[in-house]
Amino acid sequence: MTAPAAAQPDHDPPVPELFEAVVGQPAAVAALRRLARHPVHAYLFLGAPGAGPRAAARAFAAALLCPRGGCGACDVCARSLAGTHPDLVVVERTGAQLGVEEARRLVGLAQRRPYEAQRQVLVVNDVHLALRSAPALLKTVEEPPPSTVFVLLADDIPPELVTVASRAVEVVFPPVPRREVESWLVARGVDPARAALVAEGAEGDLERARLLAEDEGFAGRLALWRAVPGQLDGTGAVAAELARALLAATESALEPLKADHAAQLGSLTEEAASLGEKGLPGRKDIVDRQHREERRWRTDELRSGLGTLARAYRDRLVDAVGSGDAGALRPAEARGYERCVDLITEAAASLERNPSEVLLLEALLVRLSRTAG
Image: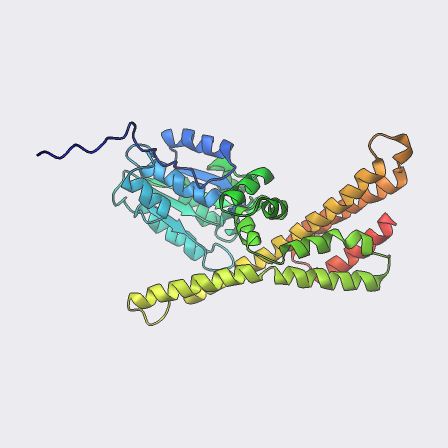
């Protein structure tokens, strides 16, 4: 007796979305889909890592390497998205800057022939830190073989790299909108109320949002920054005490990232041991990179705290202006709160110059107290 034929599905299974990992960037994704149809030699993805440029670079590489233009379902797309395709090469810096050695390596990589596809894609991270190697990088990007496509990733473009940037097609990745961050967190199983709180402090950065969602101290730090205006009394002693408390809270914010880094290092060490390695190759470079990420996280956390403080003063400004009732309008008080927001914005911008954090905060808090008073 012949077995009955297996039931056939009424429709084909859905094709995986190539840019699924790129959250809250519809304009960038639309641009990349369009650009993949007629690729040129170089692209510049401009935006913070947590805004999605790295995930977009893998998806864009898949579109460039896939024989069907990025179908999302084939082995080429799968390996590109996983970062394991031989014609997708990611160049990371080994020091504090993207140095001359990395630029020289790029020269060699750019000249090689693709292994499988019709072209190769070279993704270069942290191009904004290629200050010393800018001339070598410019020459490489200007004169690649026809089969090489560069995807340069940068947080911003300093003056030294304006010429490099001008040789590439720019795709901008702004901070992810707060509601998109919130929805992304809820989809990952985060409680909606906590997701809303975390999205406020994530500053449009999904990686930051992921870690903050696991950080039990986040709500307390947020409350600490929000309470600052009500605790200032114009004295340096109170300002100094508050500055120390805020910096201690900022330091504690590093714990989830440090735990994440320890887990990564442990996993890599185990993997190396399974392959017969006596130690982890490149361990020092990995640890140095992690330390740089931790320093950046600390700065981002401090900047986020200052943003929370600015919002606290904006709330006071709204209260001083009132809701249209002439009796609620307090012009002098409103001007003071406006000035406080300006002072906080200036302090946040000065973090790029690596100032003494304790002196910066103490001075800011004293000025806020006297300005709002």
